[in-house]
Picture 1: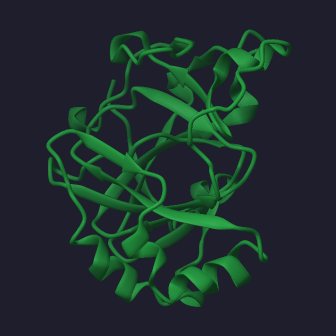
Picture 2: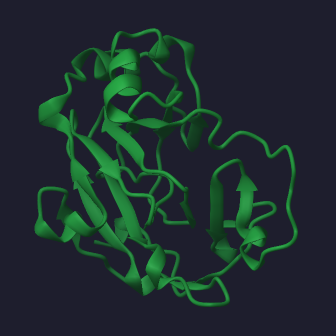
Length: 210
C-alpha cells in the first residue's frame, strides 16, 4: 500500500501537532546532532549529555515544558517502515536535524481491544531545521528516511520517559501496552519487537512504496 507524503505545514497536520520553529533557535542543536552516531538501522538515546549541555536545554525546560524536568535525546538511523506506534501521557517535541518523514495516527482510533488499523496512518515530511510538537494523543514511532538517506531527529520529553519500568503493573487493560516509563506501544507482528503487544492490523506501512 502506497502512502501519500504530506507536509507538516499542511492543514492535515494540525490535529497531530504544531510547528514551533519560529519561537526557538535550534541551529546549534541541529549542528551538534551531526556529531551523534547514525547507524544502518535505528538507535534511540533518551538523554544525551552533549545535547543537554547546550543553552537550549534551559530554554526548553523553562518555556517549552513550563519548568518541568526534561530530557533531550535523539533517534537516528535509516528506516522505511512503521513497525509500531507508541504514545505518551505528554507531548513530544522533535527537531529535524535532517529531512525526515513521520508516520503518525490518532490515539482516538485505537479499538477497545487495543488493536489499531494501519490504514489510519498518515505520513508527513519534516524538513531539516523544523521543530514540532507532537501531541500526547498522536501515535508515532521511529522516523523514516527520505529517499533512503540517513535521518537524525532530536527527541525532547519529560525526564525519565522511555527508561526501564520500576514496576510493571497488571491491573488495567491498557497495562499490556506499557513497555517503558511513560511509553505505551502497539507493535506489528512483522517487526518482531520483543515484549510488544502486536495489535497493529493491516500492512506494515513502508515509505519506499511511493
